[in-house]
Image (cartoon, rainbow over all chains, first blue to last red; front, side, top):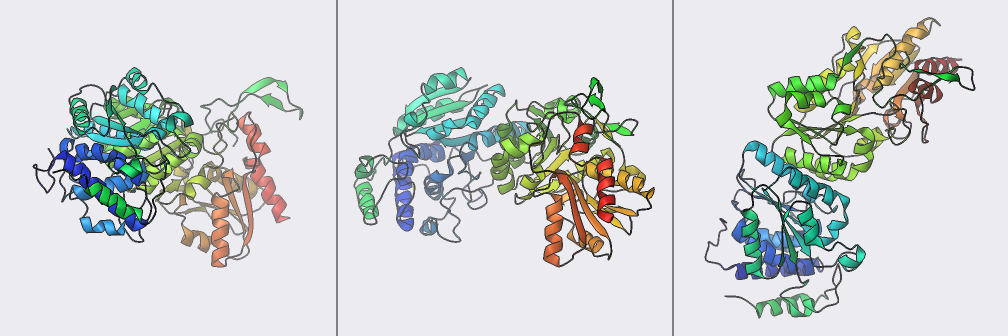
Length: 280
Length: 341
């Protein structure tokens, strides 16, 4: 369905790899960034932007587009990478990431960036906005869908559960939410900070069509998006278990941290490690 | 005029009849005062007949914010979000982002305290066209601090992009509703619900967003007021005529953006005591907004502020509480007389 400029013949593997590469380049510019999260979620974003979603790269506000809401604003580096890959943001703009006057601030904001539909960063906002967008789209008779990404740490926020309850109440089958379970939030492993399991059972009990997949298995993620899009009468949740640093072995192995340490010289090492694994 | 209240059987320490706690939906109208029912709900219905983008949203307080009238007229344009104020305002942002004009209602305490970050981020920062309409502003509930929104104006004044309106009566609310819709962007309005006093029609008053209006002139004292305190100021001005004190009233319903030109001009008249009266804590409301303006612009009249004290207010009957905290008409009169001595 995607209208991405490189056409349909580019594999999802290559899209995900490109997204990872854009993200590493941005991390190097700033010398910091939520690179481990960007690497873990690249596969989900590749499926969203190059398999599931409908959009026009040269018209980010096109009325018929599927909406993508980034609730966890610190994942902006990952979404910018996807927007660059989708042709919505010019690739050379990644050199401005996090700099003064840039359209690509460290935490995503709606007014700064084409294709950024909400101002995230204060966690737990995205699902509530998504519920409103879905209600609005149904009012308009639009067949567009709303996709929203949030993090497992956001499950601690009561507002997330308010939104989860209401989406089922209103039968919002135009809502597809993805929660990134990388089991890492600011103060440590998410399940230790505040236990949220058994998550699948909870969400099913709340009335959601719920799937749990390996978020770094592209074919599993693609199948989950397809099943979610086929749902009628209820919202869909994809629980994506992901590996922080995915695609760069020395970052995968690094001690888990919300904000992982990357030394100045390591950005090029990360790029080299990624390049060794370039898909066809 | 004091709000009507029921007498209890026992007498209080002062020998006056002990009044019972004002009901949650008590009218602020005094006994025998002219009123209009549910001006907000009725005005919204009229507006929605003309404007298909209007939708209503609430967090389990439709009946208590007069939104039920809209819900009855337009059931398919009404969204009940449950007792969840964060969701209410986040979803209102989303609905607005799809081209609709949501009027989202709850109590002022819940919007200003519980949902502040949601309004800040999803509505004000994103500049969404959401109209926030909140009942029980200031001290208009006898239920104690849980229901008394004594700091809402300070909080919403501090929020960029937010327009803040504190209307006086039914006549004004009817005009504020379409004006809110004409303004593209977030607006916060303090709501008077139920049987709402009718006052300003007698003054030939017309609401204009961002404009202060001189309702009566006076050479000795100028009240600058908003909301129900304008009603009180007008009553006090009439009462003070008996004492041959000439009192003017400048009504400032738009707290933000403030009509600085009109306020400065009125305060620059020499020899007049300026008294700002507000149904709000003295911290950060209209009084300090006017004081700051005068200080910045070098206009220095004799200046006093009447507002609620910086404390958690008591529960009880509104007439008792308004007397105790100095925002009743009698309290205004006696303060002015003291200050003129």
